[in-house]
Image 1 (tube, rainbow, N blue to C red):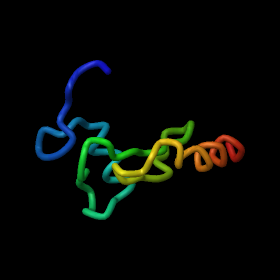
Image 2: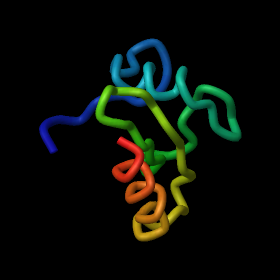
Image 3: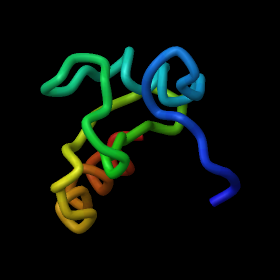
Image 4: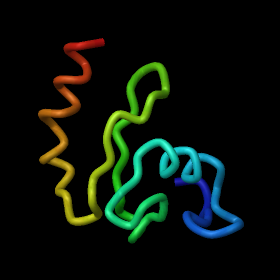
Length: 70
């Protein structure tokens, strides 16, 4: 971790603006909570978005699939 940044609103960090614009969630482009997860491929394409309650271990299969197809 480097520093605290804003995830929502007019002062949202550009990275989070981009992630949310590329993969909308249940609440559209906004992030519900700070543990929202995004899966990004090697070229920078946002592949998927996961709810804060999604356990990191549940992403393993998606990550492995992405690696196989890269």
